Image (cartoon, rainbow, N blue to C red; front, side, top):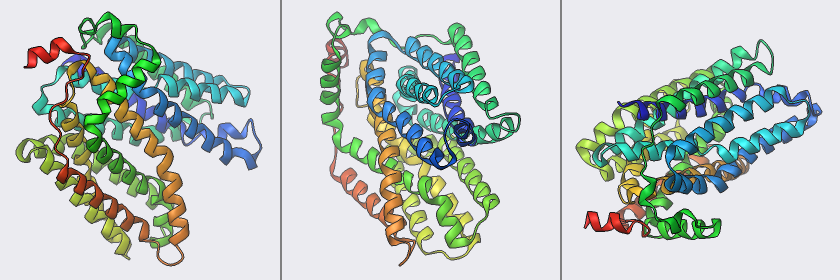
Length: 405
């Protein structure tokens, strides 16, 4: 593994860990500035603000990384994260917290640009493996973050933010020396480099059109992932009478097994079965897991179901691999920005929709929401069955098209 890929994976890990670090203590920090009755409202707005900035800016930052290179955008993201956490650690009024989240959301296209960096330096046949490693690093960060945040929070509510600022600042300094540019921005014409935001948005639409079917599948799969993310705690408490310890253990086991499947199994299965069959295997495994969650009645039954859900983790790396090889190298940042935007969009829509559906159906049967997830998977399989895109080369890269022809 070269140092640039390693650094890209470390950045993804830190991004996820930073999110996880602040979640346990953010409500306590908010209580210092707003009344107890308003904590939940402000907490939700802060999370939604970050997600919405990601939806808007991730494709633009990904596109700009195609124009000026990956390295400066990644460094900007790390610097933005450092500034964000430092602001939140030293905040004396609530609007500073909002400013910090705004900065983090705008500069936080780390995942998109890091994925582009990995796509720049890895061969097409191993993309699924590396996208799986990327997902595993993100999952590992989400596991480590809350643990670190919980312990650091025992010192003070500001301590986790100071720790997050310190590690992102350290990553910024290390990246200055070992992170190399992987994208030849000189391939992009001066006309493209000088394009306006409106022209950039138009260019993004041109790239999306030939990939629309695959992007819809990507959105559906990410949306389904919001079901357990939103309802796991409530469902476990109501169906199995879990306490906080059992909820935490189940989440840790799921996160660990999911990361292992993404990091180790995704590339292996895609190599031997092909990406399309790997996607189908992942969908079937996760779909079976969702169905079983709907019908099981005993707590011990959850553990084998978690293995099925974890196996579903191979789906997104394989799908990203398929999408990635259908876009010219010069547009990888733009593509990964679109995928990141779709991911965060599901993070805005999913919790609202699935929480409402769960609330509306829980009195009759609290398993309906998992069945809805199975139905969405059927839609995804139908789209995959009939959508067969050819290779898409982004129109701006004329010299690249000629070389490939």
